[in-house]
Length: 209
Image (cartoon, rainbow, N blue to C red):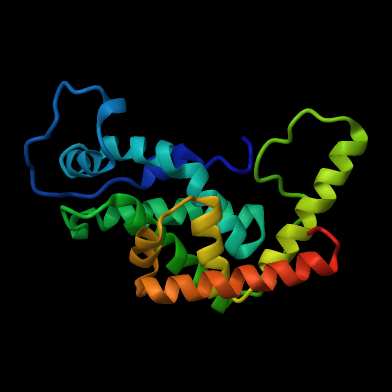
């Protein structure tokens, strides 16, 4: 199994919780056409529906965790913990809100808790995404650049690392980042400005910009 893939079987084994019976919405609708929020509602009646949300978000949550903790094995564990915690708290999800920022907030909180409990180690052997087919020389240069960028991101304070990951890796809007981190939008903008400035200085010193 590639490191970016969450072990669905492990997650599925934990998705057992007794809830009051309720009718399942959107019956007969193709699952690919269901919104995240519709899947959440259906998962409250049919727990197996939550697996579709895991499939949709497993790589994005792994990527976020990887940028926060710098280690593929720990990022995979944190991604699984994110989905397990989200499932067991589905009944607290507020209808009318978007699922993605709520899920990202769980992941960020778990990563921050992890950082407080354990030192962060940067593993340069973990491959977050499959490498493109390149000539050996070009592949070596690409890997060197990726390592320097990764180190630069890992050197940022956690609050800056989080906004960089959510904005540039997850492509969230300022409003979604604010919701995920429970911050005012102006604070998100300030964190992004300072994080980008810090990254720019590091990368310029390495002659990458």
